Structure formats: C-alpha cells, structure tokens
Image (cartoon, rainbow, N blue to C red):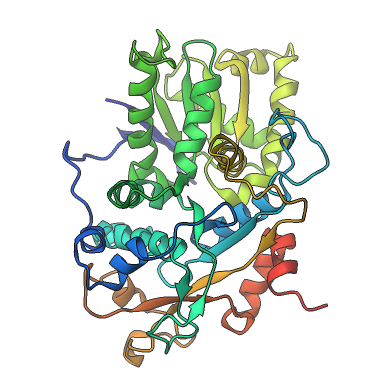
Length: 431
C-alpha cells in the first residue's frame, strides 16, 4: 500500500495524516455511460462527433480541455515553448517556437469546473461525462455558435492531439477517452498532466527513489496521483520492459500538502521537512508542483535546490539526504508541453510551417434549457444543481461555443491576462 502524507500547518501543533494514495478501483474497466452511447448509439450526436467527424490531418489542432486557469497556463506554454531544436528534436533552444505553424485550441470549461465539488456529492461519474464531452467536442469539426444553437452550426478545427489540463480529469475521464480512441480507431493523441509529470520523473531517476507531489488536500484525496503512479511503476517493474529498473517495485509516490512559504527557501524546506517528518528516508527523484498556477515559481524553487546541494550548513545536509542526484521541482505544464512535442515528432504530425502558432478559443456555456432558479446572478449553475447533475441525462445543461469576450467577466479577463499574457493578447486583446 502506498503511503500519503498530508502536512497541515495551523494554530495548533502541526498534524501529519496518512492515507492510501490511490483510490479503490475495480480490475475491469467499465466505460462511462456517455462513452458507451458514443460508440454504439448511431442516432446520438456524440456518435456522430466520434465517427463522422473527419480525421484531423497534420493541420489539425492541439486542443487543451479543462478548468479555466490550468487551460490558460497550458495554452500559454504551448504558444511560447522553445525547448527543442525544431530540426533534430534535441533539447536545445533554437529561437523558433516549438509549435510553430500549429493551431492551439483551448477549451475553457467555465460551466463544470472546478471539479472537486463532485467528490463531496459522490458524483464522480459526472466528471467522466464532462471529460468525454470535452474530448468529443475537441475532435469534432463543429460546435454551437451560441447557447441557442442545437444544430452545431459553427465550424472549428478538429484536434489531432487532445490534452487534459486538469489533474482530476486525468483520473476521471482519461480511460474513457482512451476507450473512445480505441473503439473508433482514430489517430488522435491524448495526453494528461499527471501521466506526463509522473513518467518524466520516473524516467529520469538513476537510483532507488521516491516521487514527491506538492498538491492541495482535495487533489491528494482524489487518489489520482497514486493510481497513475501504480500503473507507471508496473511498467518499470516489468523485467520484459525496456524501461525496467531493478528498484522500481520499492518506489513510492508521496503526496504532501505543505504550506507555501513567504520565500522560495521556506517553500522548499517546508516540503522537505514534511517528507522527513513523515519518516521517509528514501531520496526523492523530484517533486511535482501540481498547481499549474505555480508553474512560474519552479525556477526559483530549483535555484534553492542548487544552493542546498553545495551548502555545508547542517540543516541543508539534512535536506540533501533526501534529495537524489538530479533532484528537481517540476511543473506538469513543462512536462506535458515536452510530451506534446515528442508525440507530434514521433507521429510526424507537425504542419512544418514556419509561422507563429495560432490560437482559437472555445468555452462551455450554460445551456438555454437550464431554468433560472438553477442559476446565480451571473448566469452560472448554482452549486446544488451543478454538482448533483446525473450523468446520461436527456437534458443538456451546457454547450460548447467559440470564446466570446462578452462571456468572460472583467475579473476573468484580468486573470487570463495575468496567467497567460500571450494567450490573452491573441484571444481577446483589441489593438
């Protein structure tokens, strides 16, 4: 059983809790109801989206689906990344955007996110339905032009690669999407932040080590990281696998909710102290900073790591004892951007155009069929209605439309500009 440490600072003495890091799940995968409908019900609009939409050619888009902040951060990363040499694919800045000539289509899930509320109502199946609808809309070449459009009259680029930006969607919906891709034999790629970040650290580990995750208690309690880790560890524990490591079976993932410090030094030492206080002594190969809004702080955290590595201070020697060679803090944004580039290159799906990446935005909006009593003053779903919705209902409570500046509040627009300035400039900024 994998261990999970949740470290909580409060006015009272700090407490350390342990729980299973992965949720219970049956050995037999059962597709979500909507996934089954999309595969077998030929009269369903979702079946048509899966089987009747044209396959995305090399000019298809890279779609990013999930909650607003994480989708904004990942879109920005794709638009601005320059990690690889575009000629030979080596890790090297070449001054040309990694996704030059590509089209990125963020799909902001304004209606259904944040997803943690579904756990409180034990309604995780609805998260799976949301993920399925997001994927099917991404691969379709049509969407609604407005909340009143039921005929999907607006055209959109069909996705050749779909990225799930939300940690929760990685655990609740990813397998349903893999099922849809397999059942339809589409040549669509599917990536998620959890698999990318866990696999990145595991593949770079050079000795027996654990993987750390710095995340909120809600994310930790979902069990997503532990479940994904177990699957990846099985690959590295398989003696027939080229990725085999003789120490992989002993490796663990340790999820901690340590408090962010006022400085990078305090943040780094708080996490490492939590790990040591939890009585772990196996070195960490690295720590995943789950919150994508913290992607910008990873460099400053690693600057602290570099200082600890060369320090002779007694406290730093203690921290260094649980830091394996090559230890780094990593953001899922960087990991999945790199995986996206590698997927495109491996499958020869680049447009090979020398031009800045383009971006076209889409969003979920509340359906006109939802009654006013279920909406708040901003026209968004009230929590009691939102999180209690049943899957596989005949009533559509949301639809997908092109991004409209008028649909974003002033606060949301300010947040978009702060999180993703290039994305903001290209989607909503008026020169």
